[in-house]
Image (cartoon, rainbow, N blue to C red):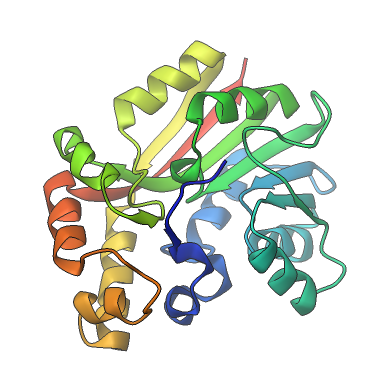
Length: 241
């Protein structure tokens, strides 16, 4: 149920810049969310779209939380289990979470809601698995100019860029499901920092896009689409009412 096309998040080209977190800022926003939410040690946390389990490992080792991850990518899951065989990582989709209702104290979705093929169903599933008063943390990309979204959607690449969220639409969807918005903060500077790191590593963003022969996206079209949408990055925290 993930997006189709070249899977940027499985690419070692991306990992050489972001490390195992595969997102802007590494654990910076993860840590901010932990401080905001004040989860007690032993709280059960689900990371939706956990990749190779970097955040699961961070939450367990640094904060003594009972974190578990779910991801559809066998490539990333195998990478994580090779790094740490003890990590509780399971294969599955955000639209069909393999967990019981009201099982989780918190759910994280870090640069992954924008990858879901059915965002409404994913949000419903997250609401279902959260306990009453449970907290939902979203760190993701969004289009600060919603009128530029259509161009992003046409990119032939499976990445958070193509699925960039729209702030008002996301908030409306969460509230309709029964969530209460507790926190919203723009962190576009983290996305700009990541872009700078990519340019430093590969010489230019064009070189980054062209580095993998499997990537069929036109670098110029990708650049124009991101510029038109005014790509941003944000943190949102919502509570289950």
